[in-house]
Length: 143
Image 1: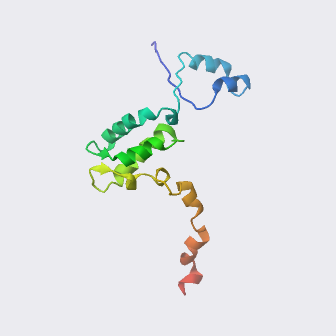
Image 2 (image 1 turned 45 degrees about the vertical axis):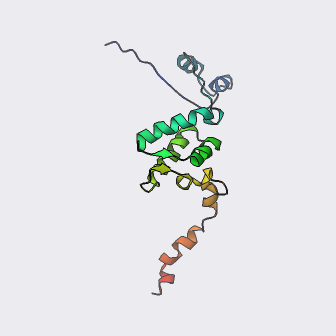
Image 3 (image 1 turned 180 degrees about the vertical axis):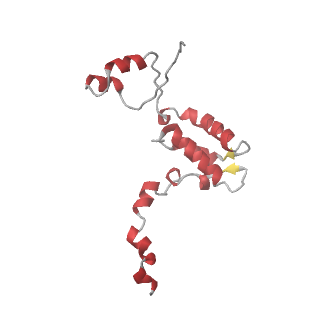
């Protein structure tokens, strides 16, 4: 049985540099590097954001629209997590939309809204695990 296979692979590391450093197999690099496609990060192609948002809305809730302020914030954000992070933000906004017909800034993740801490900052502000589990300890139950 003859099999014809094409592999599409993606990475965010410089494989050519890794080959020169001896950290990636050269033969595998040349097998994979038949037609390289360089796609810039989302922060460098802001014009794609409205199209991607529309695509994700069709995937999660086709009847919703996005307010101008929410779209402005989506376009202003740097998207360190690229398209996956944008998709997650749209999915979150749909889930938190409360049955509204339009996504507004209140449904966006905190890091997209001015003067809101990022999720990582919020985690740093959480009380310690001792405080969370203290009410569960036998000493605090009064027995």
